Structure formats: structure tokens, C-alpha cells
Image (tube, rainbow, N blue to C red; front, side, top):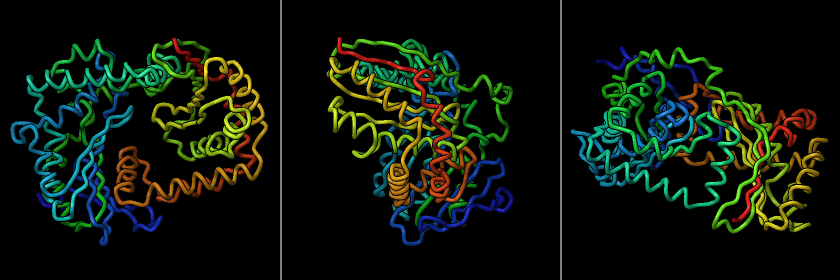
Amino acid sequence: MMVASVIRSLTLPNSALGFPAPQQHLLGNGCPITYLPVADASVVCIEFWCQAGSAMEQNTESGIAHFLEHMVFKGNENLPPGAFDLQIESIGGSSNAATGFDEVQYHLVIPPEGLALACDLLPKLVLQPGLERESFQMERLVVLEELSQSEDQPEEVAFQRLLHLACGNHPYGRPIIGLRSDLLNHEPADMQRFQSRHYKAANCAVAVGGCFASDELLKMLAAGPIAELDAEQDPALIDLNPDDLHMHWQPGEHHLSLPRLESARLLIAWSAPFAADPEALMGVDLWAAALAEGRSSRLVKVMREKLQLVESIDVEVHPLERGSLVILEAVTNPESLPKVRQELEKLLTQAQQGFELQEIERARRLIGNGYTFSHEAISQVTHHLGQASLQKRLLPLDAPLQWLKQWDQDRLHSLAKNWDLSKACILEVLPE
């Protein structure tokens, strides 16, 4: 099959952050290949992405997305267990993978001369899992051990409880690793159905960055399993009601006692705009940075530095496709928890009146520099392109920096009503 017959080009954003403009071609089945040739790069980074995270699991499938990620590396009849890692390591490369709520991604970094090998092996590894029963049973024990280790960490237990309380029965309220009862019941046939349902061309994307020849890359990928992915979306996924997929927020106040917890914790979660609205999320990031990033931020300056009420306090923004999260965590001693709660409520109320210009400028610099620093390496940029391609949100690399400039005092103040404690899910955690 000739490359020209299976690929069409798309126009992508201009160059930014010191990198040339990325390019994208669609295979005949619609799977996007986004690539960024950088002649002076010392490596090539290849990432395969799929919308097959834990949020795509049905009620009895919890943990199967992460379990599948494990099973992929057990190989198949043409790629025995360990053969993939052995061949990639033999050329000086490295591999990794990660399963999140919304996506799963497989990652390779190789020297340029290993491109042909990587383009051959990675699709075969990811798209043709063997799921042999004996390997399946052994790997189930590995996953169950990971779950046990997570359950032995009180901080992780508290965080998972917060997600469950805030998100309820939505998949975001379940641990990505899964529930023990479901993990014990999964069978290879269940995993095969999950893989067949989600690993479709419409749900996948490939990103490649580094030193390579574009024509060679496209020829190799167009001749392999990625081009053979089914172009037809699973009817069961097409018919899903979008409203049923969205997270339904559950505000409220809760308490938890845990053994082996060394310090008390106050966890507060708010809902935030969907990941599909990154400009709005930039405003949330700016608010969070002004509030709790660095020693000059309001919460740190008052609660840790001045009053010495907390060991640490921070606010994290978690962009998610079905409803993002903002999570505040304060670590303190049990006796101080009531005072921490009182002081925090006062500071959040003050923040609803708005931030001073210098506070916003400080937060803007922190976010802008952090974003720029996180896109210095070709592997980091490739990661960004892979996720953006998968979610069909390819924009100029410097677009977030432009949005950051547009969030002024008045616009940021318009967010104030969203951070009322009455809209939050609050969990106070004490040592048992």
C-alpha cells in the first residue's frame, strides 16, 4: 500500500517555544500521526495514545484499563515476554507507559538509528496483546500487590476517599488501579472485549518528535498495525449520552480517621471546567497559583510562614475530560485542624474579593515560566502533541502563554464565586 493512498495532510499551528511547526497526517483509517522533526535532536521520542483510560470502563470493568497496560508488555506469539524491552534496551532506548482516567499512553525514547525498530515493535506490542491465560493470572497478582501497597498508604487512602465522595459512582470516583472485587473476577476475554471496543482508529493518536526523516517515518507507520486499526467506532460508544458521561458533583462535609497517619489533613475539592476548555482552566491555574504557590502566596504566607498552622498547604488543578478538579490539601497536627479550617475559610472569603495586581503578576510569572520550562525537551513536547492530537486540541505551543496574558484582575475576579466552601467537597482526616 502506497503512503500517498492512505495519508492526507492537515495544516497545524505555527512554530513556537523555539520548535518548528509540527505536522500531522491522517492515515486512511483516520488515525492522526503528529510529528515534529528536529534535526539537531539527539533522540527520537514516540508515543502512542488511546482514549482507553479508567473512565471508559463499565461498572464491572474497574481496573481493566490499567491491567491491560500491564498485559501489553507480556507480549504475544510474535513478541515473547521480555523481547520488546530487550530489543529496545539493546539500542540504548527506554520505554514506559501510564494509564490515567481519560487516556493510556505508551512512550519510547530511542536513538535516531533505532526508528525503524521502534516503529515496527511498538504498534505490534500495543495493538496485538497476547493475553495468554497463565501470564494473565500471574500479572493479576502483580496488580493486586500494587493495590495492596496503595491501600497501605494512608495519604493515598484519604485522597481516594475524597474522589469517591466528590465524584460518587462516576469512574473518577474509583481508583485507576481498580477495585479488588473486580480485579479478582477479570478474565482474558473481558480484557479482549475492552481492548477491541476502545482501540479503534478514532480513539488513537501517535506523536513523534526528534531527529528523523518524515517520509521514512510515515512509510513505516502506514505499513504497520496502526494503519490496520478499525476505522469504525464501536456502536456502544457512539450511542452514549454525553450527559451520562459527565461527572455529577457532590458537595458536602465528611470526616475520616485512619491508622498510621502521621499528620492530620484537610482536603477540599471543587469542580472546574472541562479539559476541553483550556483557556478557562488557565484562569483556574492562575487563581490557584496566586492563592497557594510559593512562599509569597496568600495561604502559604499566612498559614505556614506567619501563623505556623500547617506543615504544608497547596492547591492543584487536575484537567479532566468529563469534569476537572481543583484540590486543596493542608497538612497539620490534629490539635490545629479546627484553627486551620477557620483561618482557611477567612482567607478564601478574602480571595473572593479579588487579588492585588502584584499577586496576579507573580502568579503569572510562575505559571508562564513553569510551562516554558516543561516544554524544553523534545520528549516533553512530543508528550504534549500526543495528548493534544488524541483530544483533537492541537494549538500553537505558546497558546497557553497567550491565554495567561488575557486573565486580568477583573476576569479573574469573575471566578471568585466558584470557590465558596458551600460548593466544595470537604474531608477532614485525623490519625486514628
